[in-house]
Length: 364
Image 1 (spheres, rainbow, N blue to C red):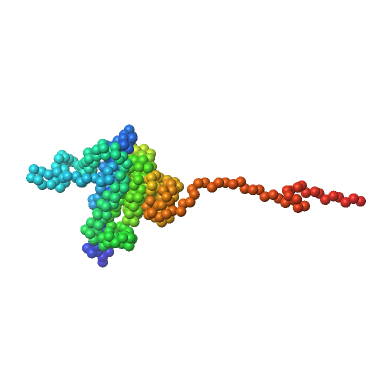
Image 2: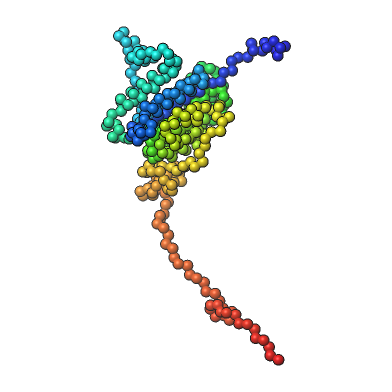
């Protein structure tokens, strides 16, 4: 009778898919953006990113988005505005005129992103830029991971997901709980991914090799893909991050088409990507950075105890990380001695080789 009167829908609950959390890390290095001023100004790039964020929010009403900058290791918290009575404005939009014809979630996200970028640029002084021009990728990835982990735990507690207990235990019980957390059903938990929009050079993050690799391994254990949209050049460690976490890495040949690349390659979430043919990269650069000078090396010396990498033998032959003595030996190229040629013996016992004589013909 259930198939006739359709009364079984009273016994079934809602089966909405979990939302998707998109964390965007924007490389705001002013020197790198100055080189792209002719092809893609920062203002047009931000406008394209805002359209991409709105498309992500429109896919599901419960989708979430977070944005981090990567020019400074930490971003100071912004002071909330207060009215004449001293009350804090919870939405922070008292000084911005309201646009009635714009969808409210889109307007709030646009105002928040532009305000955060403006505060970040205002708080960055010329002395900060002169002292450190490298992109703080490790700090931005750490902030993105912290926010993702916090939102995953909160969503599991609010909705009673299947991974609520495992996620809570995985935050403090080490690898065993992490394995249970990653082995749980991915369709029943918050779908999270990180998008890195990078414009810096390939060797800017060499001095951040260890924290960047730690962030990559954490994303790999938690099944959080790292997508990379490279607007200029190539990045060694970002290629490894995308390859290890099964993300999408794209080096744009034409930066002016940023919006098209974002909408076509980076908009689908993990569930949608199972049915798509994603762009892949076969020539991934797996080079590492040395621990002594932070250089990206092809061939180096590796400590057999802690696996530290050095571009040249450490002073005294002692590892700079664990202090173990390395038996490196003589690193000079071995001298090549000419090899003596062996003499061949003759048939009659004399040295050398001769021409064999023919047998004489017998006479009559």
